[in-house]
Image 1 (cartoon, rainbow, N blue to C red):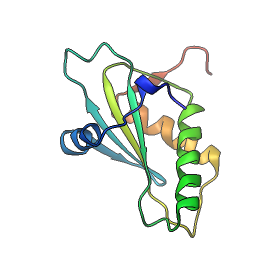
Image 2: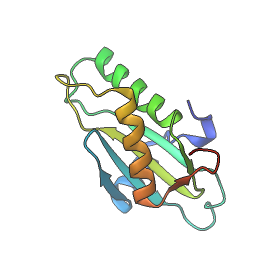
Image 3: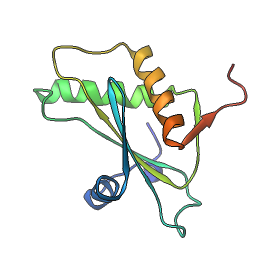
Length: 123
């Protein structure tokens, strides 16, 4: 789990990313990206996780959120500073992707959005 300072926690932060950011869609994940103001851009990237109500039941939603957080934690891409990110699911209860598929998609979407770059120690 990201450190407290590296998480999006407030409704106004989520609203700003949804309103002013750009959305990148994958098969399993939707990534919303917003560049922060210049005064805040030197800080680490902040990440928020949201799960749609299409996933029925709090237990299932929490499981999906844990999967999203874990796929983000295990990513192989280095994040650039100065961005706010929101990671949301694109699947419902019926089908759940494998963790490896989520990790690959997170890496691909981060590079596609310009927020991430390949780490030098990863082949």
